Length: 251
Image (cartoon, helix red, strand yellow):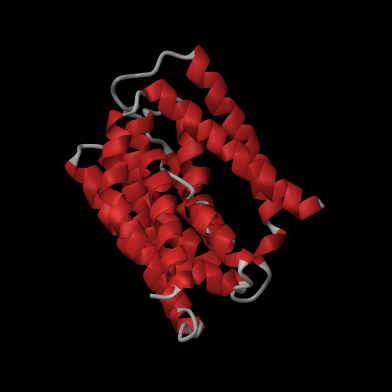
């Protein structure tokens, strides 16, 4: 088995462990690795999302079985997320998606700080917030667009915002992961119709296998971690990724 293929599997495993446990960063972490190998942004994003069709499906199913899904939240996120993802995928095939990344990173940096602040200052609810207003649908639309245009971002944008607003972290992570399958599927279909994947099958397969193995493990980890610890991890992860993105954009 080729070394590159094993590396793709390892990246897929680690990225899905982070994403399934914290509700974010599969696309961001794996896409960063692919870009460092010289794979074009559109092809890297498309490869990640095609692999995610399987990994997000397994992750979403695992969260559903563990009782981590709030169906009211899913209904608010799913359709707008798919529409935003389709729009972002279409734009990415036409322009350089890296242009928008620094602006998203600044937003995420602020959200990461808010999450850590709330982890130390608010009393977490044991039950998820029952009110999910229209703004959540707009968040889903924006998150889907960012996810496609930046090769990842559905989790960081949507999960971070909802948790910062005081939503239950475990239920938010499960609901966002469940919705992500449909967002990713829509993007992948559009990418298949517009790009040639004959050169990148090893990338897709490696990410898929590694992520599929990690998905059910990560969902279990999410259920076991204390809420405060989970919020701190989410905040630190967002800040770290955002600082790196800003640094690469301005250096």
